[in-house]
Image (cartoon, rainbow, N blue to C red):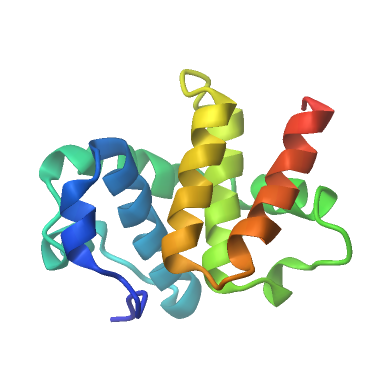
Length: 145
């Protein structure tokens, strides 16, 4: 089983349920991206995340999987000279989560999604990742799609 190598489960327990769900979803999407298989419940138990984070995490993972082609097209449309396979695994999956929320979770303001994704990127991505992700998401938000 493949997990993000820099995951620190203590901070997962200290954050709110939506943040925990997004981080669990990122773990699962990362594993799916790398191995083609993932077990969200096993990830939750392994990192001692509360069960209340599971509902939203499941919605996110299933939604990203169901709309993967659409989400990747949106990412490509807002990223200049970047193809999805060239992006860091963490970055592309955070972008997929953000675009899923933008387009399929209308109850969540875009500004909240944007902030949450950038904060998660600061923990899990490279030093350049948050700026890269912010640039793509900002391009989308400015166009008002």
